[in-house]
Picture 1 (tube, chains in turn red, green, orange, brown):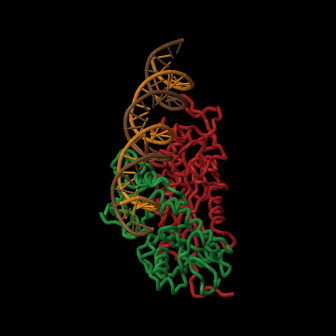
Picture 2 (cartoon, chains in turn orange, green, cyan, brown):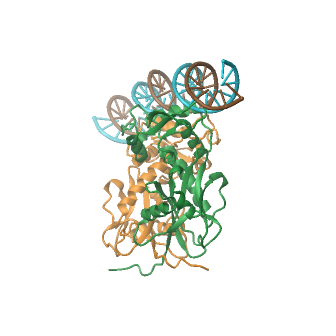
Length: 246
Length: 246
DNA sequence: TATAATTGTGTCAAAATAACACAAAGTTAG
DNA sequence: CTAACTTTGTGTTATTTTGACACAATTATA
């Protein structure tokens, strides 16, 4: 069996951008490093790929270690490979981003890693090329959330329309019209009214919705929604490419 | 200086999906391997990352080696890291895709690598996980071309509307209405009429256009086109998120 | 010079969007 | 207890965009 003798082997790291939403702003789960290298500085959660796992498994392991959660939304983002990106040793980093419901987190896991949720607007400077990673992740999230209903991954199972609107306003940093937003969302037929009301509210309580799991899956995978004639994803006549046009 | 002693170093490969367009169909530049491993089988063009280059540089080098071209559209796609994806030795592959104008190719470079342009519909089975890579690349191209005017990278500098339409029809494997397509494209104000006519045609000769380079750049980078109120990218009132809604 | 293929442009009804108004629900202050 | 205030739910209308379709103009060829 031949081997690739002439070529050099290098370290493969993984870093994960973990997004959360607190009802008002997008948050990042960041680490104040209590270990070397770069002790005392802020960074993303990361680790190295082991020999007995593939990239997705490594990313899931690292995410689980920090949040105590499995089955979060987790998507490969980009691989960073600049020569000096890690001064310790040449390392390429395969970066993932994850969307988690803050309420589901494992406080112990988070505290033991010296991690905390930081408002995206107050993000400290991060080590190495982690700032750039966050930037790329936010851009990807904006693309993704315009084309697919991934935003719901940041919300609790039951949520209100005003909550959903605030989420989209946070993702895109815009103000949206409540009435047009409602019409657009409801036209996807993705939401199921529970009949329950949001107890948290202080004035008129908004209705709680859940997702139609089947329709949700279709919107997630099939972006061919925008060939109305080729899919029966939308029952009505024509439909925009965009899941929601912000 | 600390080092990451405990972790294993592995090979970092790159593979590139090279798309072309011959006026009728999408093409892939594929290699009939005249070297080991997998001699005699079809594969993507690939190579290994060197110690003195970053990922993008390695991708450009590999693309240049095969096509003789610099400055092609080249975008990182995804990193594949399954444990047994390369039976020779554990290797992760950072995959790029490129869009090239077939007319610009370097025949010598291509022939010396035993490469040829294969119609996407007649693609042979490729080695390792290369089929999966092509699938992901096609999906990415479809996303990208719906949101940004990257399709032009596959055309000559001067092109006609019918050519452009055939390109989009090839990318999305659909038939489009000539009149609505024209209206949509022209509304972007991205095309500049040259006054010249396509000499290749056998009946009424279509007009040749070039790109408005400045507007093209804006559409390429700024996907915020879909916040009409936040950019002045579109002079008219509202505008769809999609560069072109197919 | 008629024919056939292709290109360029226009029309119209239907659908989607943006801007906006008002009524109902629920809390709090007087 | 009621007025005031905030928030939610739903409706209207004008404008824009889309999809479906028709006809005239150009050019090589028979």
